[in-house]
Length: 472
Image (tube, rainbow, N blue to C red; front, side, top):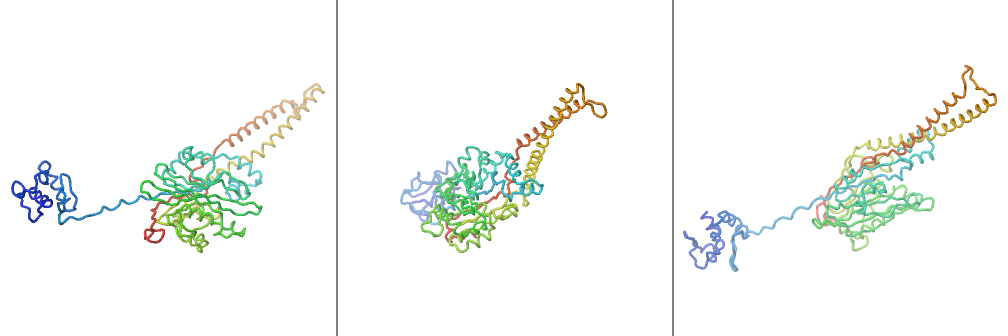
């Protein structure tokens, strides 16, 4: 302990370590005042001497160490800068939830199956429209709470109701889409920033991707590119929920694919605050959603554009991302610039949950169609039985006696029993039909024809212009 006091004092002595003289009662130099000596403070707390020794070698004064103006640092002092804390990864999710109003499209699984059962298309449309869907609000909220950013496609009133008023108010949505008939539908692309993640939307830029149709109208899907700031570390990145038209639908109208994407490109540039048109990106970007085209084909179609060449595809692991009824079975992925991202598709790769959901929709619609075809027959049989009963009563009044069957039994009681049985069966069928219409089908995260996607990654502004190897 004495040796430690000596070393600690020599580092702070006014005469320097080489000229300092330590006796049994301290320094013999009068210029070193007792109140400025480290070893004096160590008498009350011996551990402070050891701390002072360690800190003296690092060039930092410790507790109980007083440094006078003009005093020199020890010769072995080393200034070491503490490394900055590592940034936390970003987490993002994407999901095309398959809106209810698109259940009448010819490519839907239940449409094909009901056709195979012999039903006519107008009747199929009425039966599918009457199918009731029910979300699990707890499941939807639990899923969204696990991510910083959630990108959703085909957001409709049912999904907003499941999110609840608070989360629905936080949705950053584009304008409602316009379908191929030129009719505005209540379906949007949207971003949801986790309220608990300290994320804030700094800038929002809108874009409408239009495709002319044969009917003279224009189908449109609206997008929003959002510059997001994370208050935890000040990192910023541009996020966008993407839902593109299939390339075949675009090019058959004579529109080039890059011209179709031009409004989205300009929105991303404005959100990233690119100083010049077609200039390099100055902020990390992350676009995810339903591209309706495979990642490799999207890269080949946009390879001639300097802007789109800056974005790297982030294909997800886990197999197909969409049902075979979609234009592309692997059309859900992400594009990013700046940083590094990886993702995977959740749920069974064969979309067995969606197949079971489609079986339930098919069975419900088929039962409804069979009942609809059976009820008129019941009503006709009931009307015929009533007519026969009226005719028989009139005959009995004229004959002033009962009309009997070949076995001698009165016919009227038999008709009354048949009429009551028909009415009872008609009421039972009508109750069953109403019960079937009131039954709701549970719709969850995995019952869509698109699998939900999970992404994690880091953003790096320096990697956007190629000055960093963060992406490696």
